[in-house]
Length: 111
Length: 112
Image (tube, rainbow over all chains, first blue to last red; front, side, top):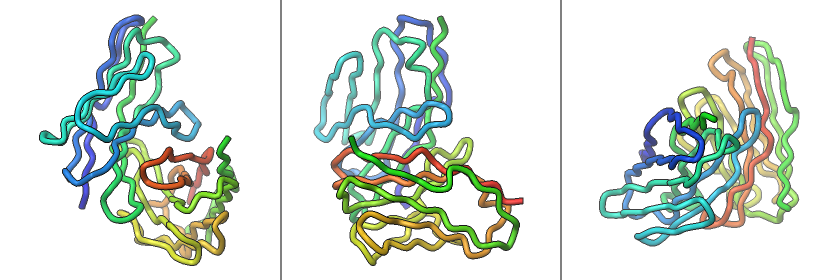
């Protein structure tokens, strides 16, 4: 069975600092890797995705993908209290249409 | 803006009863998914579908059935609800697995 593991489970970061979240996946044949943000009582919303090895930057977000080590990370520069949420890593490309999520990282930004 | 609507938003069911959760999307998306969310488990895939009248089992299908009568509608059916099925259920749709997944607001199900 495909596995997606996230670390840490929870993270407290001072306002203005960098937040770094990690995700490992079990299948090197996976296609895209996505990061979703979920605020309490809401459905997850897509933040950023990556397909190719290397990094991708969008605004304050940077994602690094290393397929050889089956690892992807999300970095949030200048973290704000509004960034406090659960962040979910999702991996596609297993069986047709299957999208698998990790267990999430709860990020709290301390003013 | 992509729209996925779930109903009901919350439900209390009795053990052994039948529960149907409904999902409707207006995005013209082929792929639809049902996930459940429990504290500490993230989102776990129950059933999914990539074409009308066909459904696929996800990672935790036991105790659940799914129905996709049209491209727009995808239902999750609990024939005999159990206490362990208390959770928040999310429906989602996407044009393809390389595209953004759009989620509904969730259904909070309590089985007593």
